[in-house]
Length: 221
Image 1 (tube, rainbow, N blue to C red):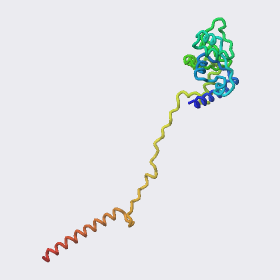
Image 2 (spheres, rainbow, N blue to C red):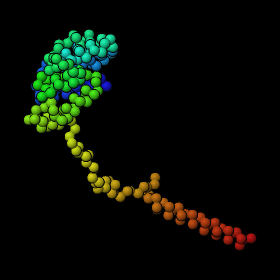
Image 3 (cartoon, rainbow, N blue to C red):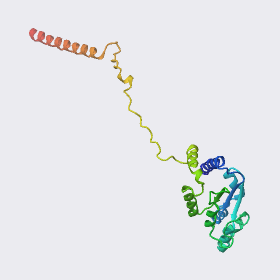
Image 4 (cartoon, one colour):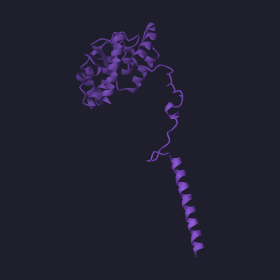
């Protein structure tokens, strides 16, 4: 399963690198849920994440995420220590911090000009990011059509109205099956029908001979 995910990630990374100028080091924004999951599963983010992405990565977070982790107290203390090791990217919430998910969504608005990746275990946040992608809010208007065409070309998205598999047309009969079957021959090289006739004839002659012998015997007596 891990190998399959890595192949899928590699294919996606190649698509964005070649078509939308995503370059190393990749800018990865991490939230508290990702840091907590890494701590729980003993994952070395700095070592393992670049290998998953297939290139060097800059691990980043925001002030809003750090503020959120701090407000959650001891339960997220370990995750906060991990997040504090990353670079802090400026967001627009200096005076009025917002939730970590809201902050990350704001960081990828207006076409995601800084080419951020988001690392999260928050399924609700992941769904919102996907929804943004589906409504093309992250992509400039002039690139919308090109994305659809490129994804179809690279096999990253299913084409609408997939072509149904063509049914095999019923062909003509097998020419070999149309050939007349050769009649089986007996060991003597005669056809079965002729052999049967010969046996019946011998049987009739034998019955007739036995009848004649019976008549002659009765006359002698």
